View 1 (cartoon, one colour):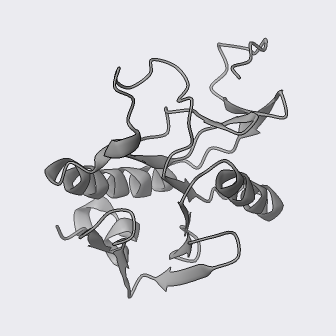
View 2: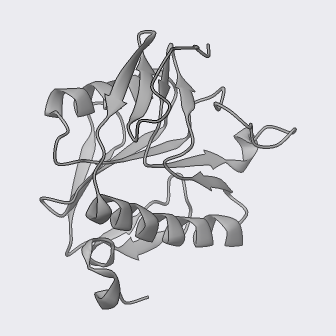
View 3: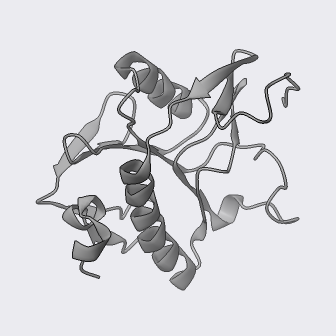
Length: 179
């Protein structure tokens, strides 16, 4: 259900479509972007090496029920990738994994609403990354979570068999990351 809505195309703001209306997506800045890129690099390497599917960044919009959402990072399993290839526009399906990096100006209620929406739309797992607290909350369902700190390893055998990375490496500045 793609919508055509008049927006200022010269604006540097990004919008998701919620209940048919544009909703500004809070932007996180350099730290937010760096965490996302470090996660994408690790996920993409693993997913491609094991032919598990595709990893997508913050330019990919997904149809989640009636809404159009832009996760910071998304994974679509190989079994669900369209035979005709990746769409030019909006993905007509929910990703298997949606990752949201919490921006400093994100509202807690908005983030929780998004988690619920993702699951209602068919997402299997949601990761909420908090740069402020240096934690990752893995939502296995809307009510079952695992909270990981920078002392932990991020392991996802359910969706991404064999994937693991040190959480501390996602939160470190680029010059201090060990690969």
